[in-house]
Image 1 (cartoon, rainbow, N blue to C red):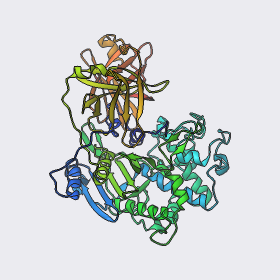
Image 2 (cartoon, helix red, strand yellow):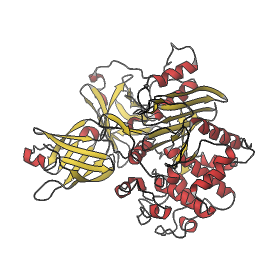
Image 3 (spheres, rainbow, N blue to C red):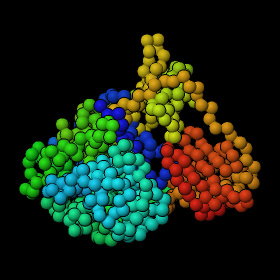
Image 4 (tube, rainbow, N blue to C red):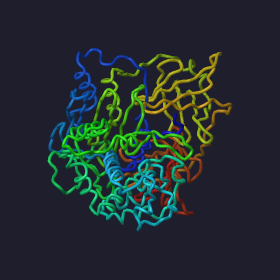
Length: 586
């Protein structure tokens, strides 16, 4: 069983990176959760009606929305559009419309690579320096093709680099893009860890071009899209007229706005493709047919069963532990049923597609910028079709009923989870993460609002807690043992004068189009990230602010005199620098 598993929170992280936002309010950290199982939508008579209600209850007709396809075998249970494809023209989304896929692109890139492996043009153990001879061999030939495919290379991800986002609107050659990370040191030894990595998949695109002598777009058209009849799937060239393409939106400062432009030379083989829900279903059918030993619909072979089995098998790290990621797909279980899936996020778009092979249930949800993450509903839809629908079951329990669960729980040598009762609710906070409020479903079982993670506590014979379990929907549970460490008291607050606060106020650009505004209200210090509400922060020194509830710390670059020139945001294990771009009137 796996000991190391990538969380689908990685996709939340990617959405923050690619869309250009690092959320101070952990809206996307609740993408994954679990809840108590009870019959859902009992009042609706048909499965299709239940599915339609599930989506219609979330997506209004006057905001961005989604295209949805739900199939079981050959039966289409739901094929519908919800919300607006173009807010300026008032055009509604039709289910066949075309969306940016974001990182669902990775599975197409991975299959193209595996076709070249089958053709003998590449090897999984082939070193990066051998495949791209002009790429600086900083890694002593340690990084292989398999490391790139499985996100275990240790190469820094370029979408986490601030210098990249300053030029994301500009078209770059492949060589120019490689310059962003080809001189960076490895973050860890190849195969030592799993870390979601767009640089690895960018390199896979460069390898496809090197081996074929053609552009990435040409390779995908000739190798996959054309032979499989995927007529709505293509490289996302922004200036090409693409019939049915929807507009992407971002929610900024309390309103929807047209999404910022990004050159498709930036996401490239990691996230540049366009498609629709119908083509994604055809893609799944072609893969299924190939896995069963058949041919694609057009008579052209896709991949061997052995290649697909490798792509859909958990990758192994150097210590022989498994991660829940194959090649281009994330792997897991939905209440005991095998699931193969992936999500994506790119300026103005969020996507998710999953397949349950055994009951052959397929769900694709493509969004053009609605605030509801599509993965939440795609998982719920698949569970409903699989006969295991779920809703949140709430229990009324006085806070003193779970006061005994408080404590510091040890996940591993470096990571803890603090559990305490605050304002009548049980909260949990992982090291370096935000404080999350739970909802009880029993005296020992909890869940997060608007998420799908099950939390349960393990008790001894005397009824005292000994451990807690976290169970994301597609992963093995994470156990944390209760320690005898005292609950942390938190950072010590200091009072700053209005003059000291005024040196900090201003606007700081964390990423292009994503601004952190620091302001003063009397002696209160407020921060507001683009598209989010105001959050009060507290000082621990004249140069450092924090908010324990969201697990964020801000350190200012402050000279002896004058306003701060910049800041560094520490949150969720990430470190992001921002330059001051505009003063803010106190």
